Amino acid sequence: MIETTIQDRERELRSLLDRIAAHPERAWSDERQRVAVLQRLLAAEEASAAAA
Image (cartoon, rainbow, N blue to C red; front, side, top):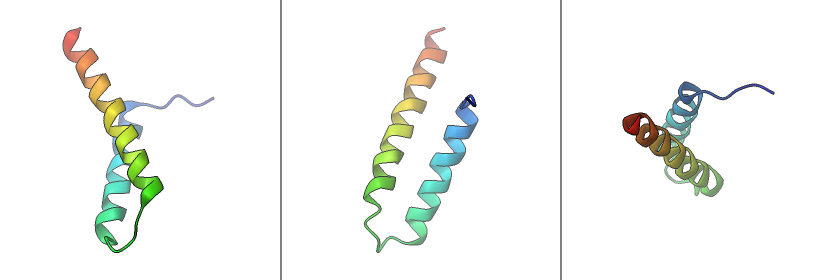
């Protein structure tokens, strides 16, 4: 199994946001759900790093 890094998540988030911005006429339901998940993961990682 390949380890997913914070940088991987940030790149995926940026890619999704760019795709959504390029075609706002689409619904992007699944992608928007993934964006929300990635944002939560990154926020949790940032909070744990700040607490350490």
